[in-house]
Image 1 (spheres, one colour):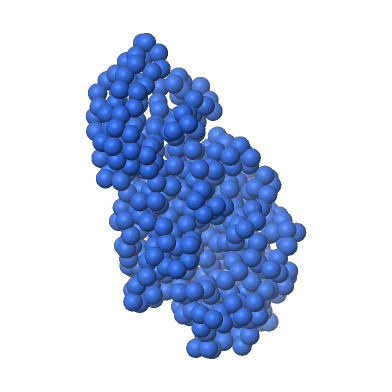
Image 2 (spheres, one colour):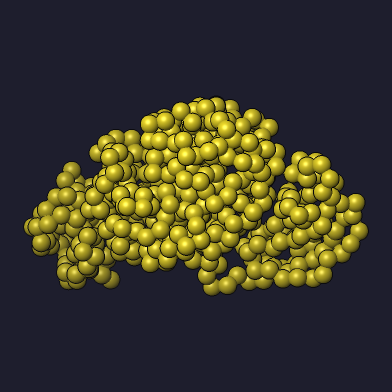
Length: 512
């Protein structure tokens, strides 16, 4: 038994151990490595993984400050290892993993509210170094605090190029034969690939980890899509044993990063080889192997998964109507009893597909509509360009208008008492009125904050009456032009003037 030297690590940061181990045979399947971390508050067991070149690693995210003792054992080595490290207080920007707060909202583990302003960039991290840096620059300039992306490369329209790396050892088919007309044929029947689904390519995963870490440093959650159907390499057609090996490897590598969310699939119902029993089996693996209980979701195409399943922490929903999606948020909140994240409400852009050509104004409208109904809409962008670089798949430079305006919404959401909004019971038929979604008495009285949104309607004024005594500070918000005008303090029955243009909102706060 060998004792490791004393080290330190921030609470909710990644503590990593590396060991030299056996390399004969297939180290990904022939050997095991496990660790047990013991703190005065309890024990946590985690699996390690083979990282190539004879190196085995264990990663751990401490949930408490103080002293941890650990033991590392397994067939990877003829030795056992022990050691001690100290988990220190987190730095100011480290709030821990995001959790469900109340029933329908989110907060970091330290209690700081989290309002997801998400975007979809399916394989941005599998592009060239230069394009990846463009993406990070765009993210830094935006208000996005969550990004959805895949581990596997993507095979779909506007995305027939090869990724920078593959998750397995092997060689791909010749992609020069792909066309807009035959791409689905290769998706249904992958051919010409020679991958070993029992031997991972550690460099592929190391690169993704670098991106996850950089996102975390920027305060952005990594909503990792573990499986998807857009495939010409055979990754969506693996056997049960190969799938399970993949899930365990992904968890062992990524779970210790505090900003990870598990998106089980993008459009799970298009994965023709997978059944509900497969998804439930994956869920058992994640619930057993991820000791940090990261957020978990599964995203639909045509058929929604049963989001009431206990392993699902929040709903990840694709639009269900050409026109309506944000408008259905409150119905899904009631139906599923969980946070509603509208990860695809269509994309701002101008491509031929109906899911990828709404205007920037309509994207912003859907964000405000969904947010006031107590949900969290997500962004995507699909503008045509000569180089066929579309944000929705490749990242790069944002070309649209909606992304510039989400910071204004986020600032308004951060002014909400409690953790989020819900549709008011007294909402009128021609308006959307939100109030704080208070689940405790900590922020009482509830009737001290109202947020009204008028969407594409263009009223020139609105009248209000709550009671004869409460004084309200009123602000008029232009959600497109991002202005906030002080409309004074009012009491009793009062009228607020509006400019007679769309996308206006009114915020009322109790003045006392």
